[in-house]
Length: 536
Ligand code: SIN
Image 1 (cartoon, rainbow, N blue to C red):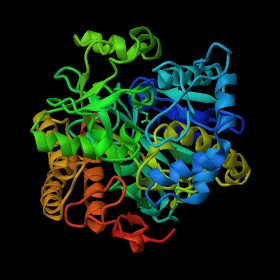
Image 2: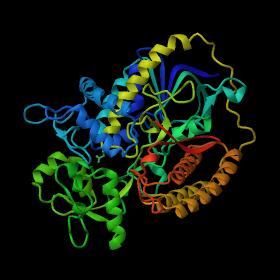
Image 3: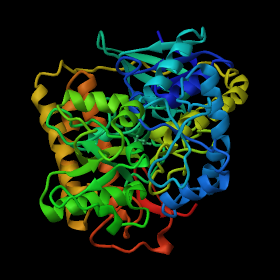
Image 4: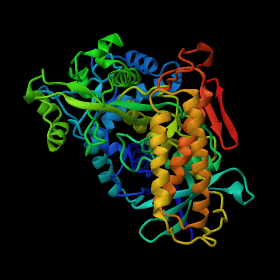
């Protein structure tokens, strides 16, 4: 028996939940989430939501900052739309009950982050994402049209062309992790909101769920993918053996924290950019990488000890408490920090209503590439994009649904297990997983070269072959699906990076150090079509 629904949403972060809450006004929504519902990158977001909210700020300035960070690849329309719709999106979150921080006059307390020329980041202390996620989940739980399926993971999209029909997505095969059964979920509209893929790198600020599942599924289904070479590294994650993924928010630098050389204590960012510690993120991450490689140090220092301890504790209570757990008091001593993979700027190409190149499939949030981020995302623009595009996609579904409901449910087969047997060698999964993450870190990290990319491509091709062989012989498990997806994402990042013969934004290569005006185009690819540049 197939499960049927108007909308199937894969992912329970800010984009997926915003979509679900709006779409529930038009029809039934199933939200599939592969662990507990609150396990999403949204819940880990410390910074906040960027929007024009201050009297001395303007749409033009936010647009200009986004375009500057995006290094010539932002799509103007996507930027204008997200920036213009930002204030209304924040107002809606306030109406929903998100407890944004306020100053003594009761006005929103606005933070500043790298690349922003004004204070415009609405935040809830330093746990903004957690508060947004909690609020949206609470609303979703009390919305009758929304059904949340925790511990369920998309295996593959169902595309009718596989069964002799048109090239249309009509749902997904979904693994119920509790009993290992793969369910057939048919939907009028399928929406990928599975977030990013930080786990493709050895060091990441992302939660374990960030394995690029949506991008990999969409790619296998034939949807167009773009700009995968632009992986953003957050400049400052805590360097500690037990805290490899703990982010130290850029908002600290927004409040005056300074990056220092670990031995000389020099404030080195002044040498790298006129905005010093508040330069766009790609520049700060590359500067740290440069200083670490030059000095042979494993980290640099982030220093906020010159600010009053009471202010730091009040503004960053979570970061302060978390650092104390690791024996570090940031009010007294600078923190050791390193860059780590943070945000996927590319993804499934989608328009300003979330529609992808595959009919029946939408993509929103970090798994989508709308053109907002270009070659480098401006800090705190991503929660904004999730809110704006989540709502716009749902509005479009509201328009499309009456007609979509006229068609009978398609006749597609149940998931076939064939002669697959239970996975017998977990070591194959862990070994391949470790290899991919390490080679991506070493060969496809902050600074790249043709020869490193060639090495990476050869190794990933070999690993993908092994994974494919293992996959078809064994029953699907979450680990195996994630490994398959991460390998696909690695292949896409490498092939997009190898096709870009310049350095731009987050893609920096020793072989082509200049940025070329004639190459200011998106890298697009799809299954069977190699990455190539396409004008906007
Ligand atoms: C941060 O708080 O530094 C992260 C914000 C973001 O990535 O947008």
